[in-house]
Length: 119
Image (tube, rainbow, N blue to C red; front, side):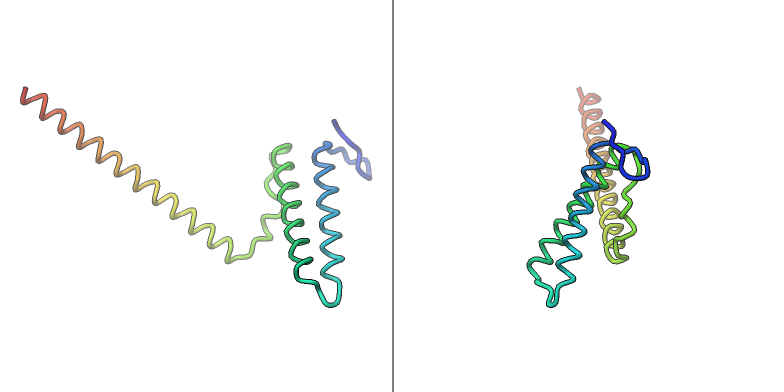
């Protein structure tokens, strides 16, 4: 269940495997972008593999330890701003849907009450 990785640090096998995959993806990316000229397609594929390995590592660490994504600070300010605005829009949309549903339920209750009084 646990593996020792250098300096007697205890980690789970899943974290250890994700770390190895992340290290391999990072090394491959560094090798490719270090070429002159940089091959765009290879660099793009290596970047995608690196992002995938980083996401996998972060997800496994979070699932196993509850620690948040260690790469979260790498999001650029424009992306963070965009995500914040999107979250606000989702919250506002959800609130509007809830209000509409409450109004609909209230109207339905009023119609039912009037019908009951008329009988």
